[in-house]
Amino acid sequence: QSFPSIFFELIQLPINEANNYRFDSVEVKQLSFRLDGVFLPQNNHPQTPIYFCEVQFQEDEAFYQRFFTEIFLYLSKTDLTNDWRGVIVYPNPQVETDKVQRYRELLNCERVRRIYLNELENTPQTSIGLATVQLITLSKAKALDSTRKLIQRVRQELTPDQKPQELLQLIETILVYKLPLLNRREIETMFSLDELKQTQYFQDVREEARQEGRQEGRQEGREEGRQEGREEGREEGREEGRLNKALEAVPRLLALGLSVEQVASALELEVKQVRAVQNGT
Figure (cartoon, helix red, strand yellow):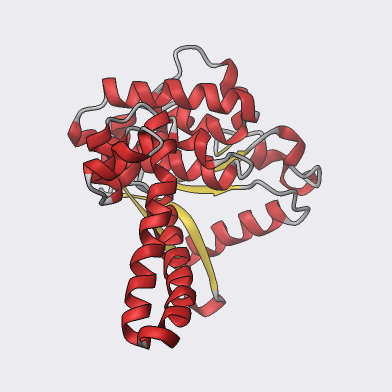
């Protein structure tokens, strides 16, 4: 949705073709079903096709039955007279169902394209968009190396109007959710501090640290509150818990090559506190 040009690259059309479409989800209310991946033409030329796109990452014997049923039901209800095309994206051919007898003619004609992401690995001169999608199917070892190279390409090749930060967020999302075995250190080494601070990953880690700090603060606050007053103890406990979590993160960020000043800014610490951790005092 954020990068429709990637879709048109996948089907080997010029990326500027995306300017002629708007991505949408459409619902046929009478029949209670929704098509989530539809590229609707911006113009009224019947020759400009509607694209129905489905990303299928799990084997489903009834997939083609449902896919074509929804397309034809939508076409029967819409006022659009445009031609249509179907695009199915698989991670690899093994995921595709073999229940295709009733749909062979459709699958073998130009109306429908099946794309297997693992085959993109053999594509020469892969664009940034396709390289991003390719991450989904790579092994962990290859994904890590490819991600490092891809992030460098995003930094070097994309201009601000090409949404580099949004693409970095997409890359981060793929790493976190499609490759869940990655640890924090592996992710953090790939992004600069400014990039990392804008990702959902960084927001989640920061919120986790805050929650842990609050929890520790509450516990310490309760203990101190029994002696010196509940409210004062809670406040001190919270602050100490937050400070401890921030200090624990200092060595990790310094190891990434960040300066003392950058670490202090990111963790909301004083420079002297970061230096104390750095010097082991």
